[in-house]
Image (cartoon, rainbow over all chains, first blue to last red; front, side, top):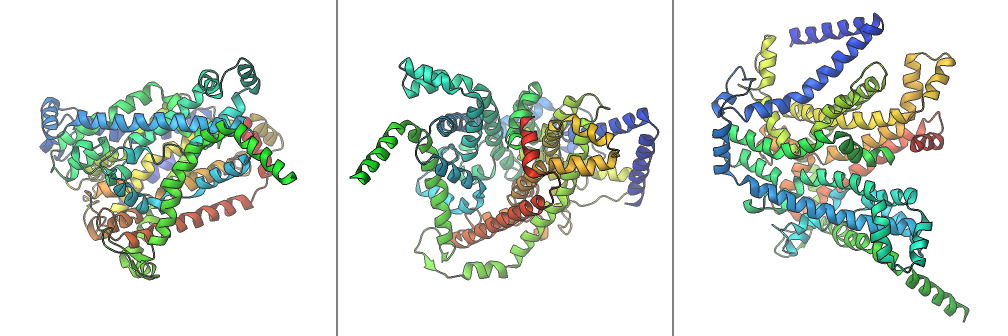
Length: 294
Length: 318
């Protein structure tokens, strides 16, 4: 360990001295730090891509192979023989899209109602809603599972979709957005024109809420797409597996064809990663929206 | 007579706003069925012995007593706290430092760096863990190879006596969350108006003073938010150690990677059928989360030199 620590210490000292030499030195030192961390962040992704093109015995070789190999086609064949990846992809899509659509629907009508109607009991109900956000979900986990099995929802996507599709955070988030962006005059005008409350919401209000739909949708999409713990408890049969479950089963149940496993991981990760890279600002704003705006 | 009229008016108001009640009903109905009822039922269940099929046996406080007597529970708690506390150092400090660097006018390409640091957040934890499992490999992993360049003997991260599994989990945890914290802190820093820095500079504050007296206090609500989030994340830590130890329900060698969540799910419904006992574990975990959240809230709220209300307003406007 000594040599390594020594080298790290020397590097740190060099960087600090560099930063003290003036504006240019400081700039260089900051870039070195940023680039080093960027390298560490990218390395596992790079290794995943590399390993999905290597033979299994090449993956286990030492020193590790750091450049792309030529075994991609073979790995693909092994992977398709071992698991039904498209099926898992489809399952993930079903769960995630159904969940996101329901979340957007229920949370937007809920948030809208809390924002524009002055109904009796509104403040109390909203306080209750906020209070529920403070309670960690862990407490209800075991009875939730018992309930799902009593409902016959084991191996059923309903168990992953229905219980949390009208969540407090989403309603809170939509209410904040409605309060800042829905002009009451617009509703009045629509009412005078003889629109019913449903029509007002779907034709007048919903289009205004588009940006809020986007943020909340992204947030819930990413979380649900990568959800693991609940899915592990609920989905027991392989034909119902979502992508994370399929990956886990490849590692733990099927031995060690690591080339195929890495290729499956790549396939599972890539769609969302490409979507993220092509609209990263949009994703980051959406995912951190709850944190930044409170 | 008056009471009847009042009642009628109230009913009329309820009727007039029936749409609003319909709109908010889904949340309250679903929450009652799928959260409130299970929560109450879990509390009830934690005093019983039940395997999920046969009759329940009242067990008094025995579940809780057995829980506190269980060596494995303490091991899981120690592991969870150790991972959580150590992992907070890189994600808090690293997040703040990186955000500060990116917020300074000296570097360009802010969006590129942000995007790269944020990439793990959109990636499935299972896939990440599979890669890291490989990188931490004993005879072939990239990390041991890197160490061997400096003349180190290979380290058995995931095997051995199991104590290094925690280190691997911490590395993964930090790798995943540092970008998330950084993006949130950066957004907070960008919300602070430049006037404040300039005013401080005119008053003769130096760089260190600006960071510790102005920047950090102003970011406090955001830091508190990320801390509470990652505390909850820490107690729910499951996927990473579980997959890293090859889907082991006991946390790998010597229970080195056993976290509270693995311990809980191993009692029921995955490993066994001790539903009553598992409910007791879930309640203990929940109470710990609540205590730590309240503690963080009070500690962070106390020392507040700038006046909490004002700075909140400033940030929200930005």
